[in-house]
Image 1 (tube, one colour):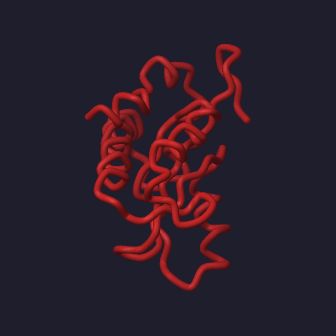
Image 2: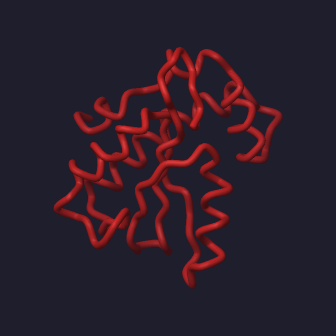
Length: 133
């Protein structure tokens, strides 16, 4: 868990199995490392389709919000509203990553650099904004 301004935060991630498979909504301090660890035990290609800087409670809130689409545990059907929410979050962060780290072509490196910056909480889009979008 990472603490900034006294509030525990981490990365909320959306990992999809294949092109149209189920989506895992989880949290990790290192979402690309988590993706790699999940991949070793999964027969389909996994891909990170969205991520957001979030409070730990946000994961539970999203699991409740998308409960109608739950398959089991943290895995959900690729419902349009989940895909739209993951895409909205991905777009929010992609622009910041590109602008702040244009020389970095490695997403691990860009996220690692981003995690060290103090402005992240102030700039982070709220996951509630994405649900309303």
